[in-house]
Length: 139
Image 1 (cartoon, one colour):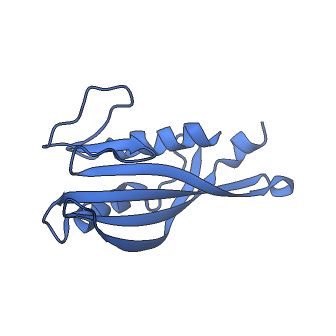
Image 2: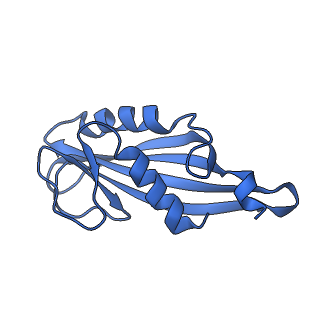
């Protein structure tokens, strides 16, 4: 699995959370929805998640490939716990996920509050390590 496919797979998985939507080609998200984005988060909607894959550990002799993924979570305006409230369902969807879409396993590595953006929307970063399915690595 390449990094582009992995990023889109994570976006698709997160899009299964009720009220969260992954629309890679539109239409625009409403304020009632949590928009999921590949990479950077645009100015709208307020509640949004950006997904980016980074870092690689590959062990070809063991058919083991790992990637790291960062979720940048942004809550609604003037809501101190907004990003934290988004992190909980994301964690529930990803932590311990196994044998799904070329993914052998996922676990969270770290999280960090990022503070509010210029519009008063709290942000947070959650980082996960993903082990890719070793059957796919051998092909």
